[in-house]
Image (cartoon, rainbow over all chains, first blue to last red; front, top):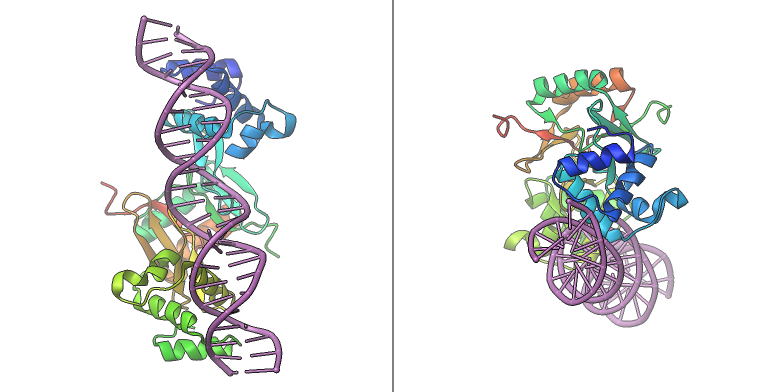
Length: 142
Length: 142
DNA sequence: ATACTTGCAAATGATTTGCCAGTGT
DNA sequence: ACACTGGCAAATCATTTGCAAGTAT
């Protein structure tokens, strides 16, 4: 995973038995260009001119296909549409602030304590890559 | 908060300057009858015959009004529609299992460790009453 | 050649909103 | 009385799906 160029991503995709169609490359290009998780709508719109626009329905279909292939991940934002990113293996989960709307990735070390406490107190294994921990971030909290 | 009879709930509502209309009582009755958080659709349908059915649009409006008044709370389920409950002060958050779909309330003691770890590791104050912690529960995890 | 994909449009599910008639206090 | 509400239908937002035409391998 964690391709950093379109060529690498295309190789990834083909290695998974999928075709590297124009529309598919477009989605990958947009996800590579984005520095944060983005919505299907944003991908289809072309990230405000930074990438080429394309059909929204196809974008949804490709995001889904790429996710099944393990190349893409999607996360449920507290408000608004789902957000998509390339699957990167140094991320373990996301944190989202209800106040400012920020969505940021957290690595394994940062989340370890939370995971442990959750397991100990409730027997749950957090699914933070798909469902961010929602709360109020340090800067929003006075 | 935490009314346990329609009469008490009606008093609550009036104390907040709202009218105790028939449709409003209906919503409260349904929430009192439900032993778990329920969707607006379920409330409008009458909890499969246990309460009287009513207009879905009005249910949404009333749930919203009652939430602003502090009588009701709604939480974002990982999949499907939002779920509503009466605001009870012994609850501190919810846990939801992605596998079996169970949504259960957790009290302050259960969540204390998670809250602390989250604050320490990321500076976040969890908003678990509105956004449940999502993961895989003990029974679903082999 | 042929199975995989696309683009477009219509369908779906959840929720909101406009509007005018009805009702609680 | 009069502002607050209700019911109903149409609108909106996010996402899915059907289908005929196009294309990667």
